[in-house]
Image (cartoon, rainbow, N blue to C red; front, side, top):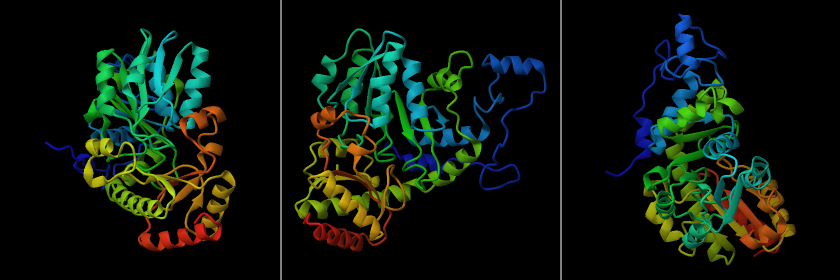
Length: 399
C-alpha cells in the first residue's frame, strides 16, 4: 500500500487534560513518584510510562515525537533542542573512538564542521565523498566505517542522494544509514527507502514559522532508548533537550505541514521554470535539467512535490548581494539564513550557512560565489512575485 505520511499524522488523536483539542502542556522539569521502587525502576529503564526528569523526556515531547515518527514511518522518535542537537548525539551514539564515517561532501555547514573539526578530537574520522556516485561511496568504506551519512536533498547544492542505493551498500557492509531529511519532509520518506535513522531540523519546514529551534531523531525503539539511556545515552547526557512549550508549538504547526509543503513546492517549481527560461543558471530537483530529477521522482511521495528550495547563480558575490538587498527592499522576502518560512528567504551560502567549508573545497564541490539559495515562501500570487523578482534582476543587469 502507498505510504501516506500526512495521513499518519492526521490519524493521531490527543485530548488535553480537560478535554482540550490540543494536548495539555507538561510544564514541569521533574516528576513525582508514588513509590521509591518506581523511581529506582525508572532510572534503570524498566518503568515504561513513568516520567523521570525533563532532560530525559516529557509528555509534551513524546506527543511531538510520536507524530514525527508517524510521519517518517519509524517506531518512535526523540525530539531535541536543535537540528545539530539531533545530528551530533546520533553520530556519537553510533561511533566509538577509532571508528570512521563516510559522509556526503555537500551537507549543512554545521554538520560539516562537526565532522571535519570536532569528531577528530574523539578519534572519529570522516571521509567526504560525492554522494551521487555509489562506486566512490563504496570505495571509501573501510573496516572501521560505522555510518553512511547524507542529506536527502543536500544543503545548499540540492544534490539528491540515492537512498535505496546507499541502503544496499549500508546493509552489505553492516553500516547504519543516517539521513537528514530537513529539505524534503513528506516529499521523501527515507525509512521506506531503506534508511536506518532519519533526522530533521524542526526549525525549518516542519515548524514553518521561524520562531523555534528544534530537531528530531526518528528510528527504532531500541535506538531511541539507547539515546535516552541515563548511563550512556548521547541525547540524555549531552542535554540537547527540547522545552515542553516549544514541543507543543511545533506539534500545532506540524498539523498544517502537508498544506504548506504543497504550496512551497508549487511556488518553487513555478519560479525555477521561469528563471531557467530566462537563461539563469537554476538548480531545482523538479527541473528536467537537474541531474537527479528522475531519481527524485522515483523516490518521492508525489503529491508533495519537489520541495521549496532552489538555487540560482548570478555570477559573483557582488551581484548576489546586490540582488538580495534589492529584493528585500522590494518586500519580496528576507535576506536571512534558514528556510521553511512563510516568506521567501535568500542567502549566499558560501559566505553564510556553508562558510565553515574552506574556499578550495567549496570550489571543488561547485559552490560558487554567485550562488543564491532560495527558500520559496507561501506567496498566494507567485506570478506577481516572479514579475517583481525579474524587474530586480533587470535593474542590476543580471537579465
